[in-house]
Image (cartoon, rainbow, N blue to C red; front, side):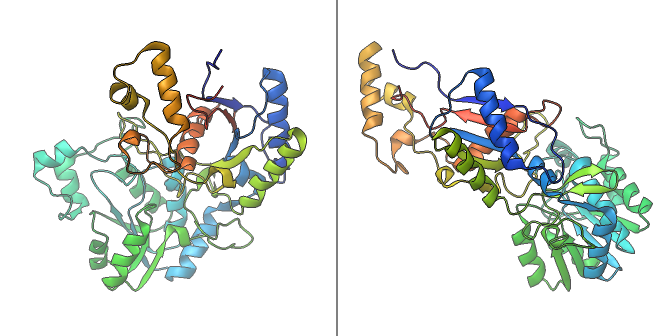
Amino acid sequence: MSRMVGTVSRGLRAPIIRQGDNLVDIVTNSVLEASKEDGFALRDRDVVAMTEAIVARAQGNYATVDDIAKDVSDKFGGGTVGVIFPILSRNRFAICLRGIAKGAKKIVLMLSYPSDEVGNHLISLDMLDEKGVNPYTDVLDLKTYRELFGYEKHPFTGVDYVEYYESLIRESGAEVEIIFANDPRAILKYTKNVLNCDIHSRFRTKRLLKNAGVEINYGLDEILNHSVNGSGFNAKYGLLGSNKATEDSVKLFPRDCQPFVEAIQKKLYEATGKKIEVMVYGDGAFKDPVGKIWELADPIVSPAYTSGLEGTPNELKLKYLADNDFAGLSGEALKEAIKGKIQEKDDNLVGQMVSEGTTPRRLTDLIGSLCDLTSGSGDKGTPIVYIQGYFDNYTTE
């Protein structure tokens, strides 16, 4: 009889990871112990993934508000800094903002509207329409914004992020002025020193600012891109991907992850004889239909993965085959016809009608999103995810 189960994603419990822990041993042993306890056999092309948080924690990749303040002060001179396009997040950005404000005399905070780049809304599109505001061209000061839209609170957190960020800056000892705009060049009327805090649009923002005459410009990826007073750092992403650790410190995105995933793959092979793929994952890339949040606040879904996870899916659309090529078949005849089509498929189906509707995304983004949903972000205690059958298809026995 054909195998009835396809893809299975298991969240694996692990010890609480501390700085200096041997994560290669911990992940390997967790997989082997879970296999014995839950009674599943390890197979070639299974995937083991671990959240970036435990990698960064084992590395001790932390920094304080004062470390951030020093780097900002060193790079901008301690005067006025235009802080543009931050995401609206108590966990992701608020503590970074405290450090930024502590390293400057004045912050001109420019918020994108109606939402930040990952979908956290200040106001709704309907409200913009009602008030006749064009978010592509209109620059609003705080007084105008309040007159038009009042004090809107985030539907899930109950926070008015405009008020919250304003108070954080003042409490950190800096003056504050707040404006709302979606063209990064709008900030240059207020200051020529700009820290752009956007994630996925940061390279375009830097290009536009440079061409418009910015004098000092760094991105959030260039703050703590080196160690400050012995702090953690990330040479490629800086503060991007950081999370609040304590009231005065952040956990940075992990660095140098590739040797780590390859070491786990090697150790699992030595223990089982199976070629298991390994990856580190951060935020998944998917959109919440109610809160409108896109989720991907990390700079990338997966900072490291083994070579078998390169590429994109190469799949046929079964319902297309059933409704078109084999519309006259049913039952066992239909099953065998579809199996034959799968066995004969090209190695590259890009552009072919039979693959239309399959997900055109990288494997690491798809699998990382599956992992993020499996492990959750709260108290599940499963920072390791073990996936089986992801590369199976309808012909796999």
